[in-house]
Image (cartoon, rainbow, N blue to C red; front, side, top):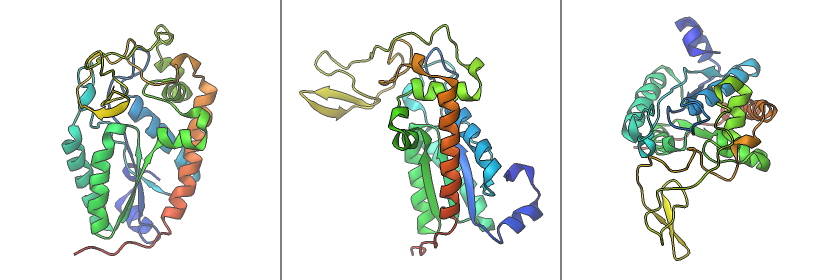
Amino acid sequence: MRLAHITVKKVEDYLKTSQTILIPVGSIENHGKHMPLGTDWFIPDAIVRLVEKNSPVMIAPSIPYGATDNIYGFPGTITIGTDGLTMLLTKITDSLYRYGFRKFIILNGHGGNQKAIETVGLALHKRGAWLANLNWWLMAGELHPEWKGGHGGAQETAAIMGIDPSLVDMDYIHESMALANDVAPNMPTTGWSTVNFKGATVIMPREYVNYSGNGWYGADAPDQATPQWGQEMLQTMADYIVDFAAEFDKLPLPQPHQ
């Protein structure tokens, strides 16, 4: 059930039996030369379309923008920052809380959004409400380890292929990954904000402009992706969320904090 598609009266009727709402959140950011900037938005939005077929849960409009400050250097990337996303989610959940929603499921498509989501979740908990943050790409890899992937790699490429193969630029899908932006020869990049020094991980936040030759990152090469993999993965995530939403709706609310 789409919040944007129904009347006020139907919202009132829904709240007589449920306090749960599902909110997809993504980002507009680089995902390599082969992938669309809207990847992190398209995938959660596609999953909730599948959820809608088998669940009565209320679904809010998808949020396309997120916190992408560390890869702002790639043309087309749009960031509202952690502070902007925190404010946006706070305003949205405050509005919904006013009418009786107390159980918020965030279907997140972008790792950089997590700090904002957790901040809003803690604030809601203090007010006697729940927020569950479902990071689809991590959960998919837990449900099926062979689906585990990195940024713009085979996992996300498969998901986009499962939505619309024409969104993937096949001219660049075979380009290899070559991590760049090493801080120094003895401090190679090992992750988004990490380097290795003498065998230990050090966090050094920085903005990436060219963190790999093709713009993807991880162990899963994009050219291993298939539409069939993507379709199965999207449906598996949707089925999981249908089950989770049903159980989440049964949870007793936490006690508000003074």
